Length: 418
Image 1: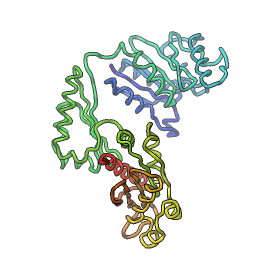
Image 2: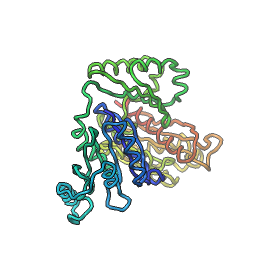
Image 3: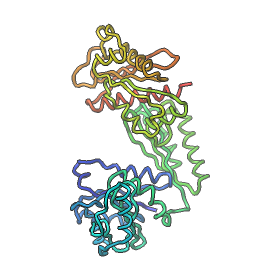
């Protein structure tokens, strides 16, 4: 089954918002052994939408659209789809019922029968929307299936989870399964992986599926898309891919198998081990805390942080010695260790991570130039330590790299924690 996605919204093409729905759909489809065959973006213009629909209907079995279902004048998705399919717009009692339930859920009065949400293209089914007001839409056309959802990511995700698989199950190919093995690495560029460390890795992995390589922040994600006739064959191929990696010189750089993010892995593992951790953040300004608290379940393991940007906060809140700040400066191993130790003592943590560095463009010195960061680690029952790193990039990128290095340091400590 081929699935095409159409993102409708001039805001995406104008750079006002970032498309999140392509990733949401890809992540949703993966456990069902499905993937996006093609994705397109169209402006809020009838001609643009129709041209994209024409292309997607020619190449795909299921077409999914997001965006343009709201109540404003630029929300023209329904009318354009109706015109494209040569259908009329008509009142739908079923849609009014769905809308009334949506409004009631949010404690708001429904405007009434004349509201645009009550009118759908002919022979469309309205879909309940648990997180918004506009109903989703579904229909079939010439043996193709069309699923339309609002563009707001949380609403799109909710509609996918509640409706999509049931609606497209008739198109699902039961004769094969598909999965992608994702090998997440750190600390080594892709040209070195495939050029020096394991020169024949691509060819070895290619025996089992389509190989891809994606450079990410401070690492590389290697993917192997595998097709199999059944789950047993899939399991055997996945095991073979894992064996290739585990017996290669790349193994020390592999930190995870799977699509999970660094912060997701930290939270899951910390909760399993009942570890309590926190951050003392200077150069990252709360970025580590932000990433961790984006993950469901983080409240069980993440106790909090101190954003100690000013030296007075380091001294008076975390207990960094004035002498340390004067003689060693705020960006030093001594300061990083005292920050971590002070946080762990005050928050009663198992693990405390501190981050202090120069994100530039100003600052820096001979010992620690711009791009330098010291990451302190204080663990219950162990001696507090600090590591320094030197990265390249502008201020925003350096903050991201500082946070990534700190989270990798935390993951290592969580993995080794007994």
